[in-house]
Image (cartoon, rainbow, N blue to C red; front, side, top):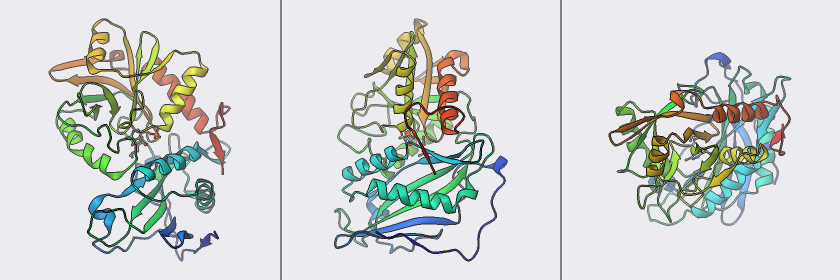
Length: 353
Ligand code: PLP
Ligand code: COI
C-alpha cells in the first residue's frame, strides 16, 4: 500500500514546552486510513489535522464500536526521538479489535506510517522534563446505520498531542476511593479491550470519587466486588512483605504495557513477583499487620502513580506514610530513564525514529 502525504498550507504555532497539560493541543498532521470489505484497509494518508465529517447515524456514535491506543514519543537529551514498545500497542489494538469485531490492521505497516508521521511532526516532540508527544491511534465504525451489528466500514486514524503530566499531582501520591457499588468491567465483557465503553462506564464512579475528595477509583471485580482489578485507568501493584503483587489478567483487566515492563524489571532485579487474585480484605489485613509497604498504579500517561491513601467504606488507610514508596520511585526512575534514553534499554523496548 502506498502512503500519500498531503501538505498543510499553514502550520500552527507550537506551544511553550514548560506549560503543557494533557491532551488539549494537537499537531499539524494526522494519519488516516479507511476500510471497506472490498478493498480491506485502503488509502493510507498523512494529511492536515482536521475534523471528521460524519453522518449522524454513524455507528460508533450510537453503539461505541471502536478501539484506541495510547503511547508516547520521547525526546532524548541528544535531541533524538524514540518510542517505547510501540509494537505492543499495535498488537494490543488488534486484540481489542478482535473483541469488538473490527478488522485487524497490519502492525508493521501502521508502525511504519506512524514513524513517517513522527518524522514530519518531529518539532512537536517537546523537550522540557517530563514532557512527551502522546500518540492516539483510533479505529471507529463508520457505517451510517442504526441496526445493531458490526459495521462494514471503518476509519483508522492517529493523532498526536504534546503533553506534560497527566495528574495535577505529578509524581506524588494520589488518594484512592473504593466502590463496591460500581464496576468498570465484568467477566466475559470487554474490559481487556481498549474500547470507549469501558471509559464511559468509569465516569460515574470517578465523579463520586472526586466528590469525596479522591483522585481515582479502585476498581473491584464485577462478580464479587472483592478482588482488585485496576486503579483509575491504570494497572495496580502492591508491595507486601517485599513481594510485588499485581492482579492476574482475567479478561476484565487491560493488559498494560507499563504493567508488563514493571514485572519484567522486577524479575531482572531479583524481586519476587506474583500475578494473582488479591482481595480488598487482604489489603486491609496486611495493612493492619504492618506488611503493606506500597501501592502504585502503572500506565503510559503517568508511568508510575504512587497511592498514598485508600478509603474503603468508612475506613481510611494511609500507605507508605502518604509518601512515594521506594519501589515506586525505583520503577519510575528506571522506566523514565529508559524512555528518555538516559540509560541502556534492557529488553529491546526502544524503537528509534
Ligand atoms: N488500564 C486501563 C484501563 C488503561 O486505560 C491503561 C492505559 O492505557 C492502562 C491500564 C495502562 O496501560 P499501558 O501501561 O499500556 O498504558
Ligand atoms: C494511560 O496511559 O495510563 C491511560 O490510561 C491513558 C488515558 C488517557 C486513557
